[in-house]
Image 1 (tube, rainbow, N blue to C red):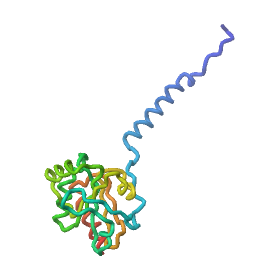
Image 2 (image 1 turned 90 degrees about the vertical axis):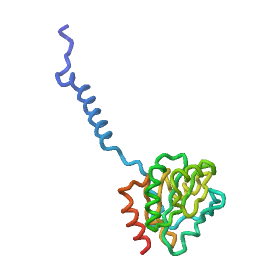
Image 3 (image 1 turned 180 degrees about the vertical axis):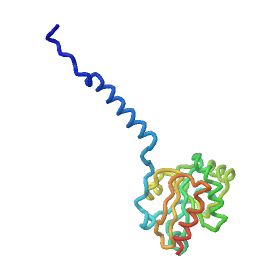
Image 4 (image 1 turned 120 degrees about the vertical axis):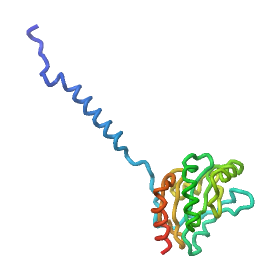
Length: 182
């Protein structure tokens, strides 16, 4: 028995210290999570070329040529199945009432569901294009729905808002819209 070596006192505490450090790192990560928004690489670049069919009968579809008429516009990517899209509906109505032209891109939606959505939540859109396969959404670099872009009158994307627009964000978006029109 006299030949056995006893571990040093600190060696007994080493596993507990490693575990404690791990807990601290995990806690810090939970308190300050990394941003998960994926910003579009198209900010400052021209709107991609596209032509979407109408999402609703009797309404115009959406074509990228609309964005080069000299007037800035807001483009909202949304879907009837998207809960945050319902949350932002009053803010889109407020922006439209403030004179902001809003174009819609409906992603992977049915005419029936979209009609119900617009009836329940309002329809601030001048045009709504049906992006049934999500290709225009991907071309814009959109990471999900809802997502909103401001495009200047020359067709250049000037601003991106990821997620639903909340009431406190309407002044920022109005300011960005006005700036895009200068």
